Image (cartoon, rainbow, N blue to C red; front, side, top):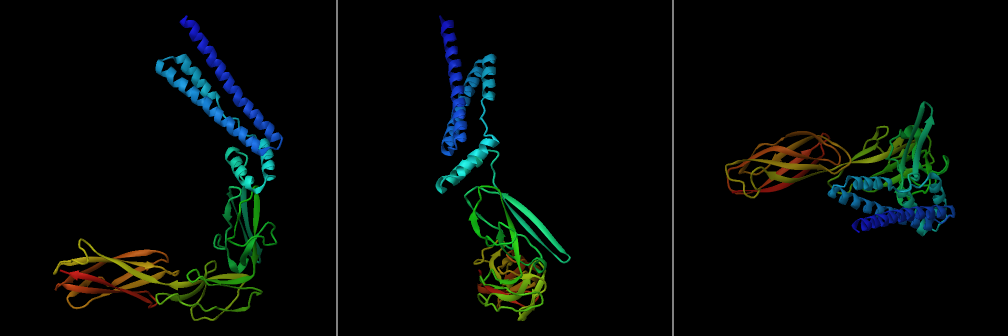
Amino acid sequence: MKRRITAAVAVLMIASLTLAAADAGELYQSFSDAVSAGDAQGAIEYYTDMEEQLQKDYQKAERRYEKAAEAGNIDKARDAWSEMRSISSRSITKEQSDALLEAILSEDSDNRAADAKWLMENSRYYHPMISYEWSSAGDNYSFKYSSSQSVTPGEEITLPDSDSVRVNTSAAGVLSGWGVTPDEVTYQPGETIEAPYTDQTLYAIWTTQVVFKDEITGFESTVGDIASGDSIAVPAVSEPDDSYVFAGWVDRSTGDYIAPDETEVTLEGNGAIYEALWKMAELFDLSAKHYSLDAIPVNTQADLSFTIANNGSEDLRNVTINCESGDGLSILSGNGTIRGVDAGDSVTVHGIRVVGTEPGDYMLHITATDRDGDSWEADFPLTIV
């Protein structure tokens, strides 16, 4: 009797597995039929249901494998393992992927982006790309560069601007935009657009211009309708505050420099992009090694340090540090020179040693002066106890 029951259970299990496999197969066939009919929504639903059914089938086979292995039944474990390996997703073919994309592109905008993203995640044949072609040629000059990126269809992407690829502006000119053809601007540099649903190439388009721009103040000015040899007025800029020192203009692609006192520049070649240079330093964060600044013991040498940050757009070079204080606080060391601080960076300056010979509140005055004689200073309180 027990053998009959066992045999009956085995028959039921085999029938169940056959039915599950047939269910997944039927769902894949329904998916294929929906693709052929141009029904993107139906195809996505059938394929999703098929994946869920296959996952359930796999989990059941995995559980049977675990139980058979625990019981030491090698034959059943082997059969379950074989079944696990045989359960695999029916991949979307290239032909189905192309047909699905065609159906998706005919949908309204609300469904198009979501369905295209689904196709990108489930088909190895659909990964839309956007390519950029940068090229320019002239007398004794030729430049060509291309790059590509995979995009998620329908999502926003930002196009490269003139800072993305450094080219010789004197030879190439100034990037005026991107075109779907090589001779007409379709999009502005740095513009945000919707990612394409199919592979697309955008062409860099160059114009003879001179651009003056300043990231610190937000100032920007463009001079067009010019030719090589023309004289151009250099715009005046206002300092953001007293801590900033204007250091001129530079075209970083050519190294062409305009000093702060120059009022005109002659265009050489097809264009230039001049960036304003500002020097600005901030001194802060004085600290004492081993002691609190408000409780440095009297007649005790204390080592101090502070941070100098370059918040401008011009590197600071050969910066001289000078420390001063009133009577009762002696500065044993700290005056000297550091090599410099690059724009956007900060440096911690060590080596300041002081000793207070009388208890009281003191002010440590620190001045930082660069090679051009431009200075920044700060006062730091400390207490000798």
